[in-house]
Length: 354
Image (cartoon, rainbow, N blue to C red; front, side, top):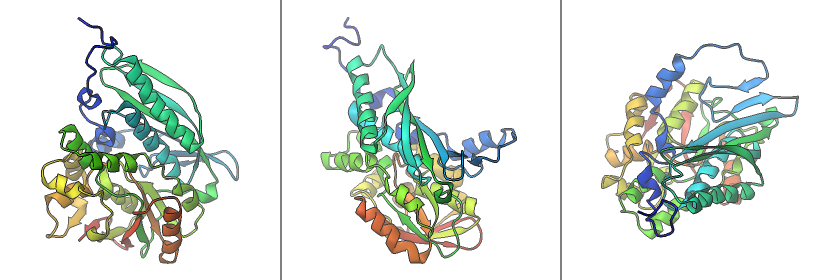
């Protein structure tokens, strides 16, 4: 019998080694809420500007009048089979939380769990290479990390950044009348489900990789715009779930025009043919009671709205007069599909989509 690291040994598909992939691995929102709600109420230092209170993207700790540390971690199991692409996607996704706070990344630590008796060492090295490539693109080093031997392959980063507290953006603070702008197209989870079933063509795969490896760099400049009132990135809970977090944190509602949402080409058709993740259903079960869908929207549309977005786009709530500036920043940094998709309403924290 050949050893796992023997060159002639068949290398398993990365996605075959994990029970879920990408941000679809997240614990369901309803279950997570039960876990967090039973946590204690520790005394919090005044310098901790952002903690767990609104399920924001990162923790923020102020060190002086002009500097605050932004800290986050994100890791998951493979969403694709190519090890280099997996590393790139995971790193892009982790660093995104720094940008979503209006921060600038400083450095990262690698989080690595690998089945070393199953995967060739060359494959593991390529995963790390992919993460390092993205960090170079972001202008930061991987300064250390931690590794374990695990049953399923896991990779991600602890990302550390910095922000001027005056430029800090949260997923709370949206105001009635604000416009909603989404930076990246939806559908990553649907395409990943099709990939796992070997139903995704080369063009679809290329579109998925392009979306998931594009760094959310506009967040730095968006943080400096006074007209931006709330900012987050759309990841495992889907577009509807992360918009709900903005609404709940801000104590407002939202209305979205489904037809304005940017969507990866072919994603809706794939969803209509059963290519959806289990996480999409768990998301709907967790927060669907607060999402009002127009009767014209069917199962495919609902699954797109709850689709877990691995390394998804920034979601912005901004004053009406800031829309052009926000879209100009996105366009300037290569986000051609960024679009205004709805607006914020006074009232109950529910999302209406038609």
